[in-house]
Length: 195
Image 1 (cartoon, one colour):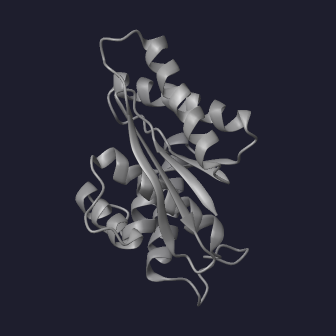
Image 2 (cartoon, helix red, strand yellow):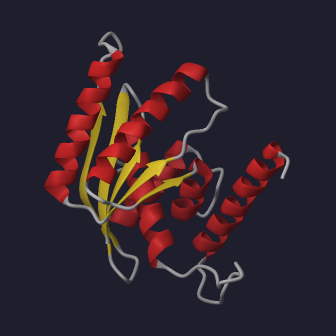
């Protein structure tokens, strides 16, 4: 499975592409950071990001796209830029009929590090280890994009729980941590929405 992961950002948008086999081994295909200048008009920045995403999708032909989910606890201008770039990415994937999933930061952290509250350094270190790289990808946006892609492939490609959501004997410690982070994130959202 080839997954294109996106860490959306208006000034720096991380894009990481990985191939993940049935044995869960991940291989780096490509990684980059799309940059736009803050002084450029918003519509031109979004156009530039969209054009580069289109080019990457056409060049690398992923099977799926994974995007980090926007969180409202950030400041409003950051949330708006991130949401706008996410929309551009969603549209680019939809034009090609690609499936898209959005993953929370805690889901991604738990998937690659086994700990939903891992810091950026820990995530980058684990991404390098998973992909067999000599050093962590830089900047952090690049490592985050690769982590998002790995998270998606591992989540989609490996049965981590049975139909009732129970952890199975085949579940790895990282998968158990990921499931716990996912449940905590969903519980938090439900609590905030009064469900």
